[in-house]
Image (tube, rainbow, N blue to C red; front, side, top):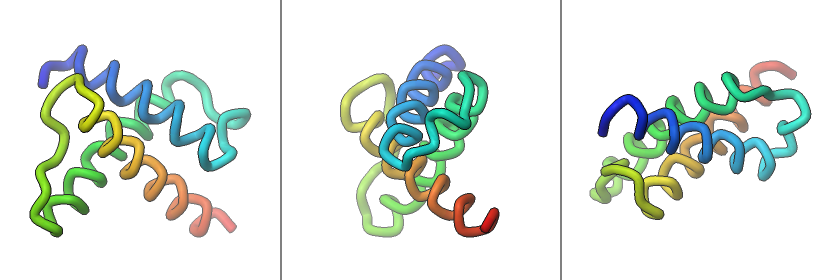
Length: 82
């Protein structure tokens, strides 16, 4: 995936994950993109443990993997900040 693909998938996944986890009011565009990109890496790592591939491009599967990883990341960050 290219840089633009990572930014698009990361921004979308970070925004959706922040809505799911109730953090949207506290996060801006850059935070959503950062959480989405890191979440895509986390989601890909978690799914590779189970033998399922990770993020492959701009498609629904990759966005769902990134959302899963972003939710995991936001959950962990919430537990650390408490």
